[in-house]
Amino acid sequence: MSREWVINAYEGYNALQLQSCEPQTPNANEIRLRIEAFALNWGDNDLMLDRYSFSFSELPARIGMEACGIVEAVGADVQNIDIGDRYCTLPYFYDRQGASADTLIIDQAYVTKAPANLSAVEAASVWMQFLTAYFPIVEFAKAAPGRNIFVPAGTSTAGAAALQIGAMHGATLISSTRSEANKQLLLDNGANHVFVDDGGDIEKFLRDVTNGAGVDASFDPVGGPFMERYANAMAKNGTLFLYGCLSGTYSNPPFLAMIQNSLWFHAYSLFNYVQDLEACERGKKFVYNSLADGSLRPHIDRVFPMEGYVDAWRYLTGKRESYGKVVIETGA
Image 1 (cartoon, helix red, strand yellow):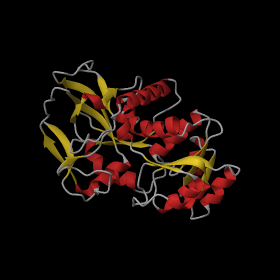
Image 2 (spheres, one colour):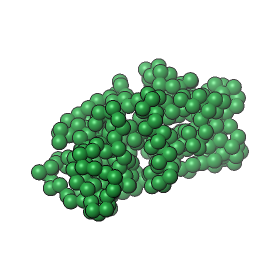
Image 3 (tube, one colour):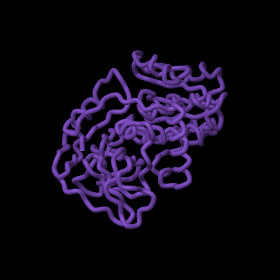
Image 4 (cartoon, one colour):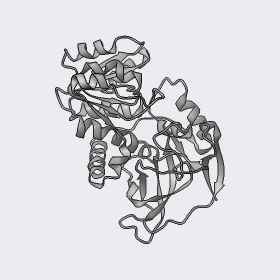
């Protein structure tokens, strides 16, 4: 008998329940993973409150899309995936079949071989953050020397990944945080400049640190009124990437600043690029190579046992003094 964490109402992580379940048999194009570890993501928290970019088709539902485990069964049409191998899930629209369980049925299109020399906990932590940052920072913002990129909320895992990846390519990285205590952390992680946001003039700060050139691209998980505060510091033809809603509202883009500065607004979701086979392969190649040569590294903040899933959410959403991925180790 396996275990699964499910949510029965859109009441946040306090509505999660641990229950027994029977392992399912994979269909033709699916595999079954025995989950060793799965990671928490802020989007999952929003999903449990029904304020994410999609809702569950019905409840109860499992949570999460980022896991690592051992292949223990394969469907009749599955190719080049062997029982006993370690695989990771890729971020995808999982509906009710999340990874918060001992076993997971998943389409072969949404798994990839676990990176060599990483533990299961580490391998469960890399794909969401590094792929999320790769496409906007490398392929779209064209990170390179002379390019100015703004990364708000740099202590988030995707923000930290963006700083690492942007620094790899020589871009000038500017980040923001609400706490002075986080400033050195962001500098150590690749930021060249850090704005400690106490409500001050972020537009002036961005203009000053770019010597008036402005910001070529922002990688923004906040949106809402926050984007309005800095949009006029964007360079001509700059791009505003919005990939989250930490402000709590999907408000309108800053149209006036966009008109005046000929800005582009790109509403971004990694899921669309995972579904694009060629794009996904480019992203995976970058992550595999960067992990292998040490350019990227997983950073695990805390590991909780399967029974501590709710405690893990309390920790992730509470006041933290350290940052990195929060991961569940199932013991399965």
